[in-house]
Image 1 (tube, helix red, strand yellow):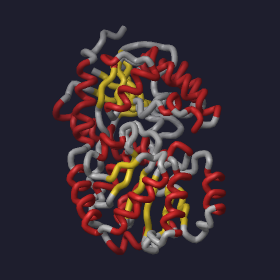
Image 2 (image 1 turned 90 degrees about the horizontal axis):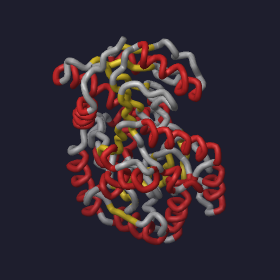
Image 3 (image 1 turned 135 degrees about the vertical axis):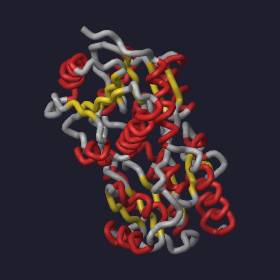
Length: 383
């Protein structure tokens, strides 16, 4: 049984989706060698694929069309041709644009991280909305099975995309073992200096775009400062610039938060655990998530978490975080003030978060994904 993997998102440079893809494929190759020895894996590389990641896998790769930069050409013509040439039985696209647009040979699995472009279209630029709608329509038409990471995402996929429930499987994301409460203080200090991060801070981490609700976080933080409830902490808003960054900077200026808020930009993958560990509090007031991996990573590092009570986030957080209505700035202020002022509460959240994070592993994700492949049937006869 030959399994094809779309490799265009195998890069840590794209944040959570990249980390999902890298960790899943690494675990798939490790577990399948012993438990599913009849499965052969072929990774279809693209211009975005990080070669250093592939070198660590030791997997077979198809580089026939690696130089094709156009996603439209790749997914319409070249990728389908590659599936035939490599005699692929099951092909897995690791993001919403990961499977061929028109061609169908064998079985297609796609990981759908969210359908937020359909739920909150106003939070995306027009071009992004249009591209997402086309990609999602391909999933509805082409995918034999859709993998989502939460029950919330499953319900949204049924409601907004019209995919039948029997075609959807829920497989929660995992957390890497390197996300631990204890780290090297020397390295942590080096990471802090590298990004210009202050010694004492509250952290947000994610792509800087409107649905992450950063403007509300800024408003809440300004109230904390005005009421002297900030305990001298700075607010670090870390992550790759998406769209709407200009509005965020304007808000910082209008609220008089210059000198109180730091935008360090994209954080390299290897520096993430130290960034989480150094924070007094991790605040993630997103309006929508298909899963919310940063919540889990922060918990694993022993950092108290405040997050939203919407979409998938309560599923991920359980009772190990403080949940708030992200549309209510006053509620967010109250939650932040309470956690910062209460050492016992912070310790309780810390211990509960560490324990909860232990229940999520990439080996478990890979095991369930391998079962998905096996369920789609054995190898076809190629001629």
